[in-house]
Image 1: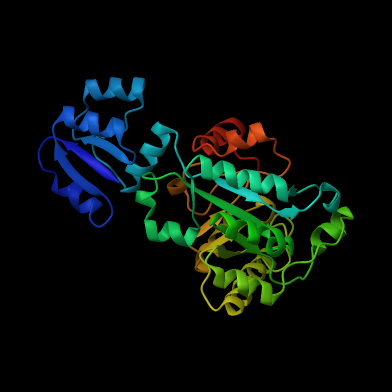
Image 2: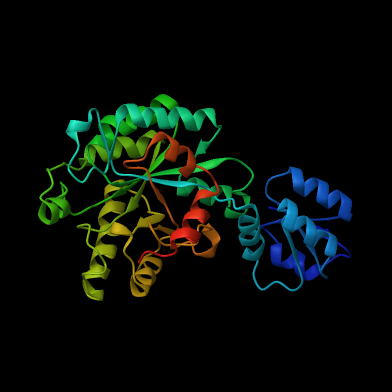
Length: 328
């Protein structure tokens, strides 16, 4: 991001931001004008400035002053003041007609999903993956209207419905695969749900090679980390990653906690396993760089069109975090 500095040259600030953020020295008036009308810009001064304080309160002008402990303070403060973060949507299944779905109703119809993609196009959103985000740079994520579509479990309908829609509208998604099963055994056994097959190796590889899909880890058998001990949790995470990476021939960047359930010990396992990101459901601050291993998502299953517009807003994740706090 761009940091507009008011005052004398600050070598410590330049060293802190070296290779990540652009430091620009300018007048207070130029800094105010530029920051008000340009995404991804923030003002910094060594001493507190009463004018900038007022503008931050009234016009949400991103402004920091004083000694900073971390380079991430700029990004976190910008996201908090502007109430802006990349929306991360969570889907599960896709069906042609509603009567094809299960009783848990974690699905959207093909017609609904196509409408979602049309709306995103109309609003000039660019769909990206976590691999893309790493290349873009977290510090640069505010410059454009990015959005991340995530899909849990890896059902066969992802190949039959999701994939053709992504190709049609030239969009991307992230699919979290359950690697040790070939159907939804976890809901069949716990909720007497209908059986839904997961994608085959051939289908997964076609999606992998398409350029429209990034795959992530989602455990071997879709366990709740609240119900298993550390040894079982480690096996579910480590072996899942090994199997899926061998299947794809590439390293995984992102993990999704089944049911959004996580414990401190589990988070450490995910980090040690080599992931760069992890997504949850009903936990997290709504600001990526507050915790890259607790990225909050928004469920789209059973969502009305009005609620879909609300949930794709860059403000929604932080609103959800403030209103509901951490569910688990």
